[in-house]
Length: 119
Image 1 (cartoon, one colour):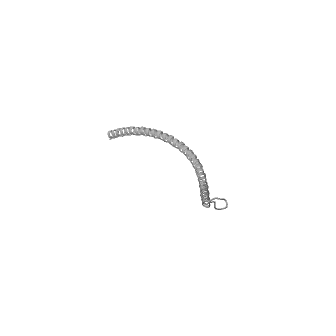
Image 2 (tube, helix red, strand yellow; image 1 turned 135 degrees about the horizontal axis):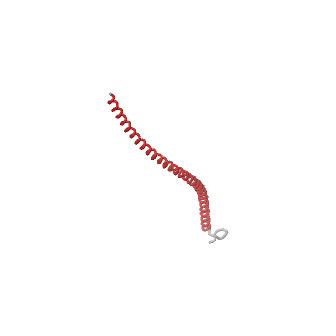
Image 3 (cartoon, helix red, strand yellow; image 1 turned 45 degrees about the vertical axis):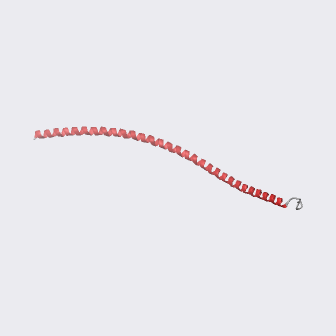
């Protein structure tokens, strides 16, 4: 039953060679896949680093926006106070104008009576 010079069955040797070939091919495929995964990891790490920087920049930008909004709010409050003061002044001016109109009307009436007496 020993065929060949080493006493092994050639079909068994063929099977072992086939299995070794399959293992070698799968190992090569595994190495290729491992290289692709390492490359993908490097790419993802780079993107994550860039994203981290962008988030930091966004955070700083948001802080500046918050400060500007606070300043704008203060300015709006000041403007509102000024408008309220202006409204009060306009009301006072309106009251003074009505009083002046009443006095002018009274003066016109007096002048009219005086003219009639002089005529």
